[in-house]
Image (cartoon, rainbow, N blue to C red; front, side, top):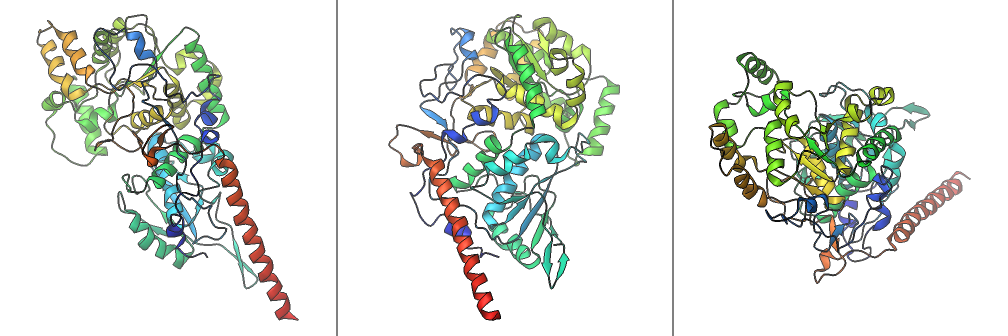
Length: 520
């Protein structure tokens, strides 16, 4: 086993390696979906930071946001040694939750392995999640691509190998630990690493939100981006289905995707009961009591303070106030809407061209291959590649938050993020009959929002929602920390990895020679 000093050694030398550039660009991951190239141009024109004005043509929102000269780059910008051939032990994790909560956990698992100089065992995906899906990592992600993409960062195995000791084959038993929520790096370098060295392997469960998001080390944050936006590629069948849906939607021009989070679990979590019938309120209350920690909420106040998902009608009213007309094609990523058709009818009256993956592609192949986590993955890819994405509830929604971050990284693609707290009194006044000036009031609120351009991350915004500036760079800048790395870095990384392998072989040969001499 190699000493834990690797964690410190990896940052001892500065300026040797400037990063991984285009060859690890997101295009390598998602260009399979469509034939459009991934453009990093700093001359991107479009809607800008907020960049939207009541006089502007809504067509500007179909373009990417103004980049300000920034472009995605998750490359290391200081020396980043390859993982040693010998590690401190094996790291197993169980990623609980739905697809996107698991995705964030996988990113954290890779980073934890790097921090501890551990060999990562392919992360386990919780089968007892919301979807009751047993696909596992192999059923959702391209395993070979995942391991190959991260070869410069961590060593990954599909399972812990057996070891031979005293002529006998022995399995390494993992020591189970429950990490603290948002555990600091220091916990992994002390408590976790100590148990790993003692037992040879540790099993961290559950592993949702078990590593602090805000870490004062840009290289660690960039590793998270390499995992999230490069290494985690869905399996070919999921990519194929997504590609087919996007091509059909694009055949008729621009399209918008909306994550319509008007579903039983989220409404119950948020305590948003007051617009439903007494029978429906009982269903929501029961679900809340059975699935969430007890917390006193006043349902009649939740909408007034912007804590509820927008209703489908409210979504339509926001879009209409912004200038979108009834010819706009909208892809809906949503589960079963609570309350049924009576909530969808007003939305459909405003925007009749509503689609989901089943209506775009009703084929048996899609029905058979788009259930559970795979169905969520298809929705994720279609929303990623849509011209505009609009979440209706980006509070604790991992799907929406991860997509916002991914679209930011994927060329500052336009997002519409309604300010629910500012919009709430406007909607409530409308319900009381005060309709004069309604659309102008909505426009004033939306003018103050960000439409997908670079912006400072402010708590409680998640790193997975906004990885700027750590995972972005500029070609022309006076700040060395923001400067894009050179283009020959793949050769540098390959050279470092080959050097590490050669040194290990040399050490192994010398060790074997010593043993042979001693046995004579």
